[in-house]
Length: 307
Figure: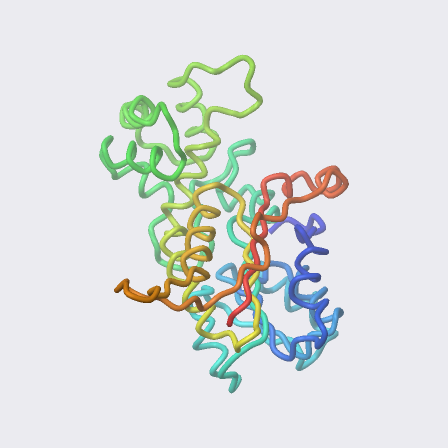
């Protein structure tokens, strides 16, 4: 795992949403704790105790180191954010005051070649958030799926317009075992737009990572779990990094905050809202943050409060 300093994105807006309230939260969950940047700031900002979860054992080890000074106020567990309710109950928490989900890939993972997330330096085609699991790797998908299955992944999760051409090129070049091998095959298959600064492999690598970790399904499942665990008045903050994630979060928040009540004389299927929108539009990084942390450029923060 890279030892480059981890910069938590949108830190001030997150603290404003979850900590800068009339009464600091007693119980907070950071469902994607990473190296502990947001968690540390939340504890320093007044959170009484925090539960941090992460699928990546390497990130969790860093979080333990960075949060050691908080003693029993910080509880860390190896697991997906889909287990947040079970982990909370292990602590005796029936409800919590705030939950943060920082979705997607961390800069630490990108900067570690042996994790296989990036194509600029050679590494194995792994891409699992939890490399200790027995889940299929990106290499497994690349070397066993047929061209239709690969093209569907590239188009659905990467919105790659040349998905079929790339899939056919991959089949002709198999077996492919490293990140640079795959990037070269993609670059040879796709005519590069001279005016574009985006490498031709960017969307394919995003798509493979999402498929390997089943990220979109996990996002769909965790949102109602998180809301259910919040106390009335508790807040959920979600940071997403690409449009597919943000679309799911936006849709769920909009639906859960919409109320339908039958007017007199009409019979409509009524629906009670369970959330209030705190951010009607996503909060994005300002120029100063982007200059310090380019990864924050694509980050979007949405916040809701439970009724």
